Image 1 (cartoon, rainbow, N blue to C red):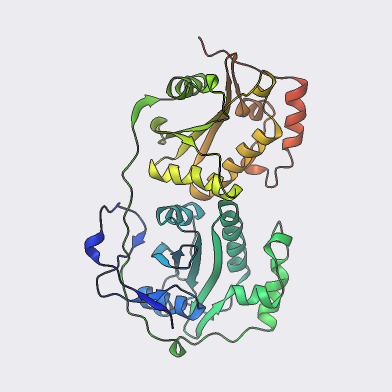
Image 2 (cartoon, rainbow, N blue to C red):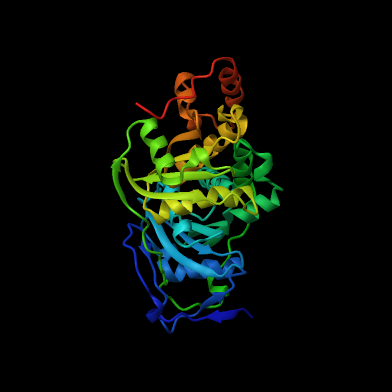
Length: 371
């Protein structure tokens, strides 16, 4: 039997207002700790949100750490009688709020059976792929209706389906056909042990520093990096970031630790800091380690591409990626603009090789830091 976690509501330090529906644990609440069974997750969703009995589609999530300890339970979106539009950026924002590395999501079918549709499979594929690149694992996607609950993970396992082997989601149509032809019997909620309804404790860190300046030009951004970190003079490889609100006002300046256990953890840190500063926009920069190193390399292009792509999943925009040296600075996005290239539209990064070649053939910089 799982241990039981009890959290006293007096531990709340600071609560942040949110458009999402957040639940707080009270002192007498019991939830499985850790959460190991799909049926336990199903009952949490049922008890929190009464998903089988809703007349509108709801999209909900359980957020967990690596040990599957429950960190949060939230209703992320509400839709109509037949569908719910899920904004990925809101879901992954909530992951960052809870410092979650795992999650289980769910939604209900108010007007039909709990058979997963092709749209459900495609949504699962998109969330899992964004999560993988952020180091956040989607453990399952549950579909509720009056007749019980279905696990999309069960269907993927039955069909021996691998997200890694289906880079564009093209195999999902055949799985949807198989679901209609041979559905797995739904799980009955009545056979699962009862879990008390509860609310979720959420304690958030204090907001970061604020600098009253609006950034418009790449030179402004480069000067902020230079004055704040003396980036061009540093002898050790350093990556920094400016975080901004949607008006371009600086809300945070940070050095990004380079030593991370995984590549996913490195990218995760950028978006964790975006959340810390309530930022919707960021500029990233590194220092050049030699005279030749100021030219954007494939490593730089890939970093910019990954941050731009992942940013679409959490509603954060990457405005530029700069490289600073004592001779001036280079802008990766200046090359993107020249080649009319959009990283968000290049789903696999295949267009970066052409840009790398063009940088070598016809460099634009370095640009001067002085007017």
